Image (tube, rainbow, N blue to C red; front, side, top):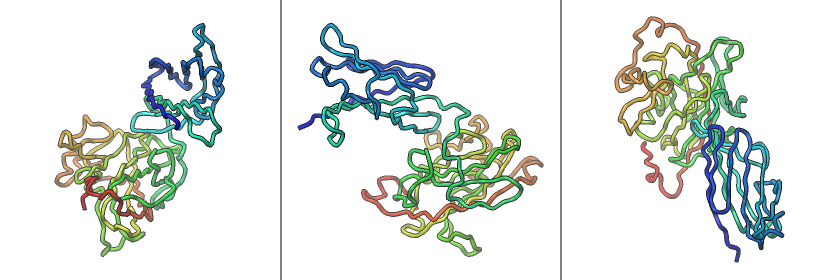
Length: 332
């Protein structure tokens, strides 16, 4: 019987940091990692069977005690590190393994490695390509809208969504030669048809000039921006249209990032503080106070024309799952 040992090593690094225990020492540097794994004398003859992801050891030092230090010095772009984005963090994940047998057999030792960095303001995900959304609008601006995978690293490979789970919806406007642009979701609804008609049944998601209703009745939230020209809506799936094809219809507005007001905003409800919060500047969250009533502009410019695009994402299919959706706090 093979024994599996797990030891989590999590490094939070602005530039470099070190965590050590009896067996493993890890240093996460700016774009690389240095790992020293202390192994027993009985394992030294098989040191070549130690791996960091897909990489073999960089060096082995045999100590006077007979024990060995296995060194891995690699770039984070090597060894099949998984790169994830979560809010304001970039996370690189991998595993140290000892495989005394052929690859088809499971490893006998596993050490998860995780390096966590503050996300650079200039960092842009690799999936910034036109996705599965359809847009129509004014001017020369090009807008995209797509459903992302759970890791927020690319376009989702499935459109089947378990009830109560989250649908990461990404929208972006191409900057090109324009001045800095702020992309806003002014209004979003779900419908069971790819086109909206006067009599269409709809499920409101965002209303009142940028207020995320799903953050009040569920756990939906806007994730921190990586750029003003893009927006990530972390939308909890709902019972509307359960088992049918569902389409997300959004009115996307492009605006000046320096001129927010009650009608040009991105707001979600924070349950801990029981108040609405402005995504782009929490200090100006008073702009969101109208989300419980009617949001109207107080400035002449707020009433002026702003480029808008009607985007449709779908079809998506929300399905029941076990355990029941009540475990997720899903509401109609």
